[in-house]
Image (tube, rainbow, N blue to C red; front, side, top):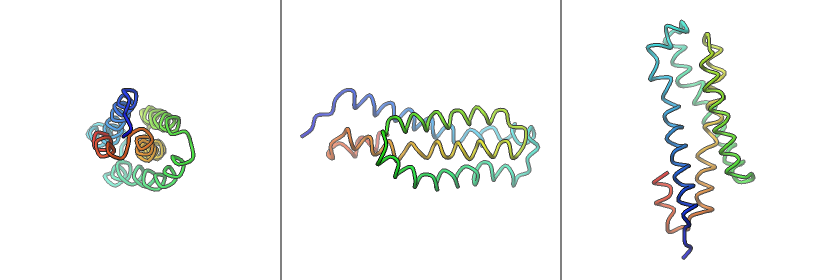
Amino acid sequence: MTKVSSKDYAFLGLLTLINVLNFVDRSLLASFANFIVPDLELSDTQFGTLAGLAFLFFYSIMGLFMGVLADTMNRPRLIAFGVALWSLFTIASGAARGFITMAIPRMFIGVGESILTPSAISSLSDRFPESKMGFAIGFY
């Protein structure tokens, strides 16, 4: 039986924190709808597109490709790139002045966030034995 090191548990904790931030970031737009919709003069359809399709389309489609990248690249670096990408475009969304200037960052936020789960699960499988994977993935 392979022993799991404290570094592996710390890595799991870091991935969990990033995953929580991923979910928080994903819901920020909806949480601030009462401020964003009038400020950007968005219709309900436009806001729905920003909160849903603009993000989810790129998140789900790119997730397929990110799984392949997670199998071929340095996973911690890939995760760091994804976090940097979604963070930069979250910041950029603060400069939005309308639908298009908000839609573009939302698309790239979806791309950045799509990197996390395939890379994280693959990384955990490198660090945790099969007998501990249920715990690791459940904690993540």
